[in-house]
Image (cartoon, rainbow, N blue to C red):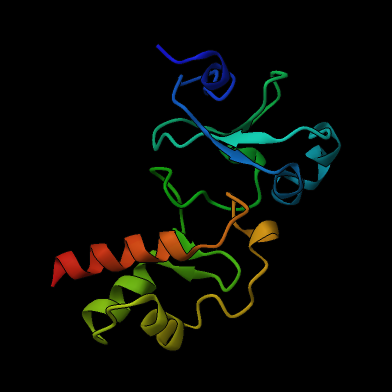
Length: 146
């Protein structure tokens, strides 16, 4: 049973615990005609692969996949699956760099794909954070294919 502070972080649709995202990031990524609905509170990103909800807050405001400007990399039907939103580097490009070019580290991926070159993560990444972890997950996926 979630405690009271976790209760506020639960997606109203799938009931999974979300990850907090700053209001600024949500304003950048919802469709332009929805920006004024965002308000000034922070949101949560629904981390369920199956759920259509992307952002939600404690006041009942929610935005689904059709209401955001970018595909959310871990949602089941994301196309493309970006690992680096700022440089538009996809999971497929990272995996290819691992499998075909021998990349093993994030530094290798940066050299081969140009990832993380135009960093403005707070504005471009749906989590509002650096994509290092997402790139590492794609590297691990590529390494498991070798």
